[in-house]
Every structure is written in structure tokens, then in C-alpha cells.
Length: 301
Image (cartoon, helix red, strand yellow):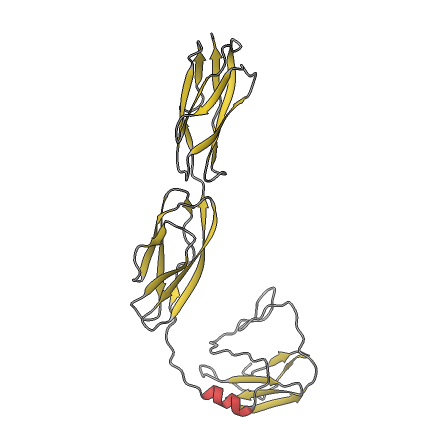
């Protein structure tokens, strides 16, 4: 309506009346002071309104909004520009207001890391994610302030766009990496990004379903696990889904290999013994695999 009004606890009411007029497309310096005795409104450093007021402003859980009202549902958005907002923990004297209003400062465009998220990664796999910066004054310098990854680094320390590259050597989880960009005027922007590292897909060969035949005591069947892992494959186990023929076990034969074989002289001769094989990454214990269902026919000892 062409006037500046304010509502300020403990007098939660629109005050100011018609004392503070404003003109469109004109910058106006607005100051409101409460010193425990008066609420005073200043226009361009000159007092235009004052009212007696005592009491504490108190506090609540509402959000502090600038340019809108309504903590839960912001509305009544300000139809203009707001700049150089300051909030003090004391009442300012009039000379302090004038001094603050007359301050001059060089307005330089802020340097901003424009990247908002980094891509997820996979354990024991190549990683690459771009980082971009804008604003400020080129050239830009990049720094990894905090790096939780032993195998990840920047492919360049300068430029408007660089890449985090390397190989992820850590187990699955969420990791915070802190990146800083500095422009030619030493203005900085520093951001913390969370990179989620996932387990990859482990596969076992030969793949299920398969039927194997144990015709005599020399029977053995070899298995190989492939896929991203940080350590050797261990904790091999065989789980019988039906009856256990007895006398058949599993043993590791290498970093990612194992075999099932006859461990006893006799096994119950029968067809259709169902089983699965499971194993895990020794360095990242939640990187596991469980096979599909195999069939073992025992035809002799």
C-alpha cells in the first residue's frame, strides 16, 4: 500500500501507520530498533516513527523468514529486492544507523560451486564425478579439504570444471568429502558432498541351475566368483535345501575360487540333492553372494 509496516513482539501488531512512505524502483534503507523502551522506525537513517514498548521479545520455534511471512506456509512474498540484511543483538543508536547506511563496499560476484550432488560409486570400481564452479573471477583453484577415499583425487587443480576420479577402495557406505574452490581474488566456496558407495554384483560360475553327478570318490566341482570386491572371497559355505547326502563339502582353492568334493568314503546314493553356495568379500563382509539352486545326483562312492 506504499508504506512500511512492521509487527514485532511483544507488541504483535502492524505498526508504522503512514509514517514510512516508499517509492517504486527506489532503494530505501529501512531500520527498526527496539531497545526495551521504544520501537523506532528509521527511513534512510532518519527517525520517522516511534512508540513506547517494554517487555521481552521472547522466542518460538518458527522459522526466520526474510521477504515472506508464515513459517509453515510462506506467503505474502516481497515484490522487490532486499539487500545487505543485518540483525543485531542490541539496539543501535542513530549515528550507528547512519554510519552503517553510508558504508561503501565493493560488490563482487560470489564464487559458487554449482555442483549439488556427486554420483554414487561401487566398491573396487572406477569412479568419476564432475565438479563445476561459477561466479567470482577466474582462474579457479580446487582443493579436497577432507578426503575419505584413498584412491580418489582431482584430475586437475584448476579450471571451471574438474573431475573426481580414481578407484574406490572402501567398503559400502556413505562418505563425506569436502571440496573447496577459490577464485583469483581469494574468494572461496566450500561444500560437503556425500558419496554413497554400493556393493557391486557378484556372480558365480557355473551359474545355477546346474546338475552335477558324483559317480565316485574322486568327484569335485569347481566354482569361480567374479565381480567388484576389495578382498579375497572367503567364508564359502554349502547349504542343503533338501536332504544332506553327507560326505560332501566345500573348500576354498584360490582368491575367488572353491570346489565341492567328496569328503567321506560314502554318501547316500540318491538323485536330486538340492543345494546353494554362499561366500563373502573378506575385506567388506556385507559384500556377499548366494547362488541359485544346484542339484547333485550321487550315483556311486
